[in-house]
Amino acid sequence: MTTRAQDNTKALDAFIAAKSEIDAMLERLAALSADHFETSPDEINWGHVGTLNHYSAKLREITDMAFGEGEHAE
Image (cartoon, rainbow, N blue to C red; front, top):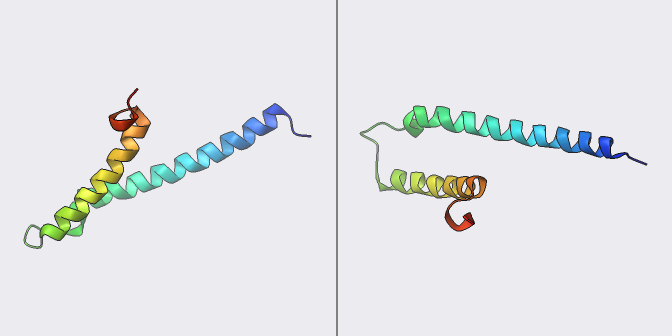
């Protein structure tokens, strides 16, 4: 039989693992952004714009959920 403290420890371990995964993804995205998504001004085309708008929409969905904004506002 597991105790509540054991359940909490498992949940805490899973939470920390998920947070670490998010932190790693954010770090990689920040580095890619700092490198202008590996493009130079001479290479930019509308495909690049579309890709960044897609990334932005996905990130906006996440931030809206995290901060209770947009369609997630109360």
